[in-house]
Structures are given as C-alpha cells and as structure tokens.
Length: 483
Image (cartoon, rainbow, N blue to C red):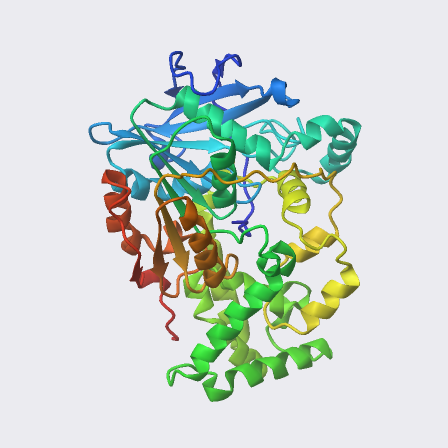
C-alpha cells in the first residue's frame, strides 16, 4: 500500500521468545507484556507487545526478530485475527489509526499485528541505520545510505533472507507460537494479500478464514503489475475525468479529458502557470496520480485542472488546501513513530518478486509516461533500483483446499485494479469458497475509506466465514462527488 508520508521514530518493546519452537507446536506459549508506548496514543493504551526470534535454519535462512502487537478481545474470546500490512515495507502500524474499527468489528477476537521482517520494529535490512536509535530513527538519514548499501552487499546471504517467502514462513511460525487454539482469521491488505496467499502455500498451521483487502494481481497478470502501475493509475484518473464530463455539476464540463490533455501539453512545453510551482518538479501527472487514493482530494482534481488550465490564481490556494487534506488523511497513520516504511525492504522485494519488466529502461519509462495523464512513482523506483535483488524461489502451488475467502475491492482502486482482483478471485475458487464485496468508487485499502460497508459483512464473517456472500456496497466517504 505505499503511502506518501514521512514517519517518525519510536520505541521497541522487547521480550524474547526462544527460537526453538516448531510451527504447529502450541504447547509452549510466550507471554505478551504491556507495551512501553501505551501512553503514546489512546489507541495503544491497552496493547500488549512481544519480540520473538524465528529461525528457519533448516531452510538456509538467517534468524530474524519479529515484533508483534496484540489488542485483547473486548468480548468473550473466540479466537485471533491477524492483520497483515501492505507495502512491501510497511509495518503493522498502518492499522493503528483504525484499530477501534477492527476491535469493534471483531470484538470476540484478539487482534494481532506483526511487523514483517524488515519493517517497523522487527529486524531490519540495514542495522543500526534503520533502527529507532539511529540518526533519523527508522528513516534512513543522508549519511546512513552509504553504510546501509555497504552492509547489504557485504552480506548478500542475510540481505536475501528478507524475502517474501521467508516472511510467509514467519507468519506461519507466529500463528503457531503466539496464536490461541480457538478460531484463527487473517486479514491482509494490498501486498499483504500476496503475502497471505504465499503463507497459504507454506502453512503448517490452519486458519478458519481469510480476508483479502485490495487483492494484488496474480503472477501471470503482468500488465497490471508494478512496472505497469502508471498505466493502472492512468485508467482510474481518466475514468474520473469521464465521470466529470458526464456530470453537470463538474466544473470541467463535457470536455474534461481534452482540457486536461491540453494543460499537460502546455506544461510539457514550459508554460508559466500560476500554482504550478507548488507541484514537485512540475510533474502534474504524478501529483494528481497520488491524489486518487484520497477521496476528498480525488474529488478536487477537476477543479485543480480547471483553475490551472484557465491560468486562474485561485489554483494556488486550492492546491495548498488539497495537499493539506491529503496530509491529514495519511497523517492519522503517520502519527505513530513505528509506521515509517522501509525503503530497502520495499525496493528489495518489489524488484525481486514483482517486477515483470526487469529490462525496463528510464528512456522507455519516460516515453510511456509522456503518453499518460496520471502516473505512479513506483515504476521509476524499479528502474533505478540500487538494492541487491534475489532470485525468487520456484513458485509453489496453492493448496488443494483453502478456508473461506472474502475479497474487499474498490472499483476506483488506482493500485490493484478491480477487474484484475475479480479475475484472481475467480481463479482461487477452484480451491474453495471465494466471495467478493464490491465497493463502489472506493480507492485502495478498503479498511480506511469504506468502514460503513465493511462492518456488517466482516462481523458476519467473524461469526461464520461461510455465511458471507458476494455483494455490492457504496461507502459514503468514498463516493465520487464533484464540489
């Protein structure tokens, strides 16, 4: 899910669990303890924390320390739900701002949130550069990049152990050693959906239901992969402008698409336009592409285009206000120091596992970008990837039988396309029950923008994962409406 915010450092709650526990062995339990940062925010006030060491040495892996935070069930305990963050590179802290929603919806469940290896307070690729006690906390400061790269390339075995496959094994071990003997559910978002499906292939543990929020494209769906992320973003941006052209309330009118293309042409030719100085590198395509995930900012895109196209000075305060809206939207997550995303982990896994075009050049990317109206920064990061990549292991088959799966998918998701998610869900049905909750106009990460549509189906899924059927809902906060 890669957000565009800056994160801050924080504390690491620590208690170590021995590394000798075998997946599937629930006889030896570790004790969570009160987190040292409970006073940091009301949402964390009763959270419990643990740090555990996992060692898949029989699989030629390096040991890693994993941080897990638990929020106790608010009603009689029926089981556990594991929330798996996106990225790759994001920590479990991306759920903290919305933890009350999960605790209310799954009131009978302990909510457990791990930081996958390489993220948050778990072992990092660059240590101590990415740890809380370094110069810029979990962020990499300017002077830390050199030592970070030097360590990565001097110990490729360790660097390569921070893989998606090992993260999937980690989840299996965590469920085995920290989970209860009652019902177990897993909720993955964005990259977390890919990680959860990888877990399903290596699991020695059993789960009773899986929820996939913003389902990533399948391995064979290369045209919707990361190297084509700008094309995915552009389709959603143009769909927004087409909605505008058909809506009498939209300021751009029936020529919305043509007006935008004319504006981009003027910018590309160097036109001096009031308000453009607020846009980094004058890159309006990427700037507006980033707005598509924030409903309030997305709805302002036609007005921003209109004022810029008219050379209207009011463009500047409008852009400033919309930027403030975006910062507020993501700021709820950014307030947790643990939430800093790991650039090394993101670059390593993205480049190793999710780049279907390793031959992509900066020149080709620039040519493609010039033909688009809305773009993503991710393809550029793939092209300029300086991190040591690993050869992905041979793909494993999905298990013949899987627990019930519920897919949550927005129709205006600029990262994981709706049609692609529906197709992957259909493909998964050969392994078991897969239902889809279609969220009209919703962007990426349904749990942030669509809680009014999720509450009832998820509560029902918690009681009986087989009882939820495919349905459609229009979340109030995510609806497209032009001011």
